[in-house]
Image (cartoon, rainbow, N blue to C red):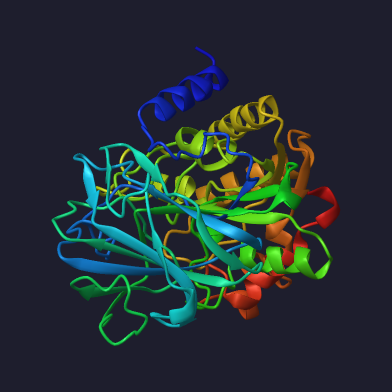
Length: 417
């Protein structure tokens, strides 16, 4: 079976496995919803790679999560996911409000979130839930706080590990508590929260840009809670230019193009439908990945990296071609991002460098993409093109710092989007 057909088939199966509440995103209501914020979710895992609350889950605890919406509007709704749950998830209650700093919420903005008129919702194993409409006006790039309360045991939590943003936990029900004092525990992951939709009739056309990739797209090395990942800075550039596109970040730390991981998300191929094409107004996707396939293929496997075949340029290029075909079949433009340098990082090898060079050359000159953003040249050290420029290095010789992510965002040709 051709792999493009498999993407379409898997997308249909995946959607079929995800029952929704009556107020689902697919239900036409004429309000003009657009994705204001979204993240890519992954399995809960207990390993040396992952350190968060996902594996243990929650019981008689409130979880407070802060996100930045990419578009303003007069109404909101919350999307939750139990995609990797093995049992139904009972959410006792939820609230939303404008962030007042840290775990604090502006009291005058706190709203109860309901699902089909009820404050409680049961999300089936493998399923999702979309809330009723919440009357709360927000501005583009404003921060909002979602609080979830679980009275009973949730079980292991579908999550996004590398949020580069602080989430907060408190014992007991603090749904209507605007203060931060009870939220003494902290994590840098998101839990059960898949997206936030905003009513904005100005976004009736296709104008969503999805940044799709691994930890470099996800923002590892950026300052926590500062919104300095490259997709954040790209959104700021668009806003300054007077444009209204929404930029969604679908990066997953450690993610690979070809192979799934028990800890680090499904492969690019297996999650492309959900994390790119299923966004209803997606117009453009910026892809960047392959460095984890390269590095893990040159190392001894662990529980998080099996399978880890020795990588070739042809294998990566072939999978990219399948993603390009799938995107174009759905009317989505594909911008190819070259892989940044990684010489000096612990998993650098000469073989890996030769694969990276070959794939980058194909991205630039192969004619497969609708456009190219040359992240490698934006970040490379002028004295050694195989290394990150020191001023852009977060310290591990692989992930950029804030300045490096800004350079990546500035390398994107806004006219190509």
